[in-house]
Image 1 (cartoon, rainbow, N blue to C red):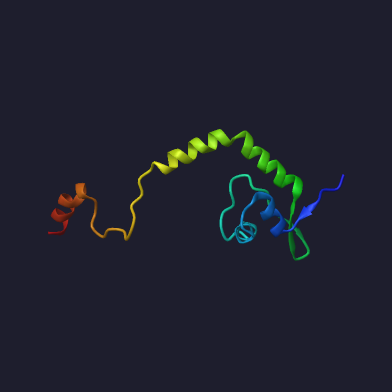
Image 2 (image 1 turned 60 degrees about the vertical axis):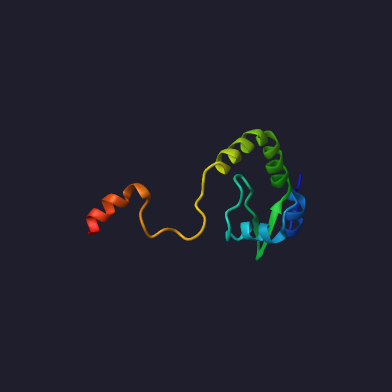
Length: 101
């Protein structure tokens, strides 16, 4: 049974993402989501196997609950915004000033 091949634009339409995003994933300019299928090279063209895309979507449905928990844990980690500090953290300032001065 032959598998149908999708262009990058068709694969992007199937997963409802931007074709530019899928192009970045295909050419490894940005990391693809976990388990996202690799494209197939046909001469100089990249194609995705439709069956592989459908299986990836099904995998998201099966493991959707566990991924949402992981996302919430990642979202709760505090991130510093803006330019990084040149001075050490508050706890280390006393020891740092003793070493410098």
